Length: 217
Ligand code: BG6
Ligand code: MG
Image 1 (cartoon, rainbow, N blue to C red):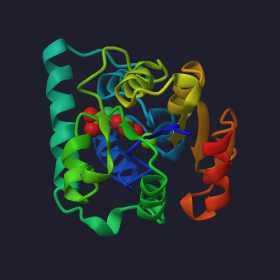
Image 2 (cartoon, helix red, strand yellow):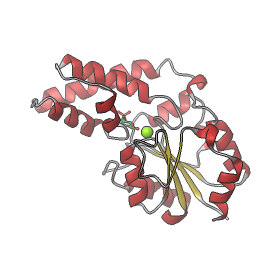
Image 3 (cartoon, protein in one colour):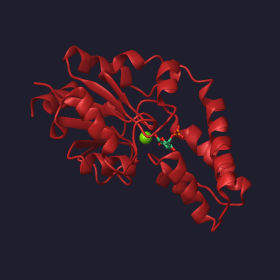
Image 4 (cartoon, rainbow, N blue to C red):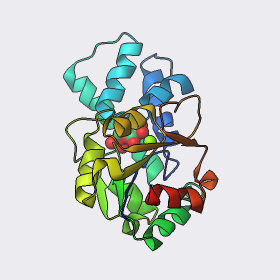
């Protein structure tokens, strides 16, 4: 029995969501645009381009294409300065345990992330070796909530979409998983991730029995 297990990165495997938040907040505030946890929630899982478009629309701002590129690059530079200090301590609780359990059970594992920095981050926290496939923001033409990222992952794992399980912390990502006809597992708060098939606060709440049931069913 083989299922495809697909993990989002930011906010699921590592606690980088807080760095995206800091970098977007700094940028938004520099443009005189308010940025709180509420706005941030809507940017989780959302591509870099789309995120900046949303922030500008919240502030009713229009800017030139050159300025747009400049701001995107400034945000990423700021974000990378946070990332560069990361190490294995920033892997979220019980993620290695789940990855090892899936490995023991010979289940194929892929990353399915919107980030163009995904490979860098996996290397920093030394988790790259756990993945049979990596699909990230460099590999897709349509961003989450479009299912493309997860469908490519399924193809690379050679598993049918309906036999894939996706772990996601974002609304856009849960929508993408559902649109791909995969089993969506929300990691985070029930208030936000209501559309997921299952929701857990974090991986410490996920039992071996639950993983077994995903593999068997
Ligand atoms: C997602 C994050 O994983 O990747 C978003 O949740 C981020 O916040 C998106 O905007 C794109 O990431 P990056 O690293 O390419 O800017
Ligand atoms: Mg995420």
